[in-house]
Length: 229
Ligand SMILES: C[S@@+](CC[C@H](N)C(=O)[O-])C[C@H]1O[C@@H](n2cnc3c(N)ncnc32)[C@H](O)[C@@H]1O
Image (cartoon, rainbow, N blue to C red; front, side):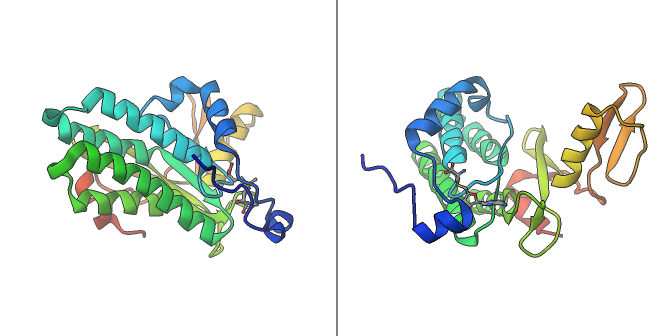
């Protein structure tokens, strides 16, 4: 199979360091964390994701696990839910809007191909819309260094968790605060709380606080109703 080009133009390499990782290297690196790549809900962030070389490989591996577990006609609803869960677990930040859009399209195409093959006549456009929506929330155009989106707002990621059957709880977090909580923990900081970083006195741990108000649990097939507040 011909490999996609790793370079779009010399100008983009010079301006943005845009050289995409070749498939062989991507696979070899994913092999180093193979167990995590095979866990359907294990979360990954590709911080300068380009067209999503790593996210695409991880999604492909997760979907293979979904197929192994739920690949029969009888289990099609379980396959659908698990494959949506796989998409929910993948996050990306990319500076250039065209790359961010290509990344979303690439991940959607991988998911949709597997979904259509596995679910056949039980595949629904409503689920396709939900996956497009999740990708619009999870793959953001922004600067991974300043942790701001291209509109100047902080990068916010949604934590999606299946809590009961088909019900999903969404909690939003600022990326800079997720990192700050982690840094404070490592740095043995004095436990001072603010609106975004809390401190658990029993566990002696800093933790990131979700943005308020939180979203009420909702059936995953109705996630698009959340919109982006
Ligand atoms: C070396 S490429 C790697 C892309 C992808 N991770 C891969 O392995 O194929 C670096 C990518 O980071 C993007 N980039 C450069 N600076 C960035 C920044 N501050 N924040 C987010 N993305 C950035 C570039 O546009 C480019 O797509």
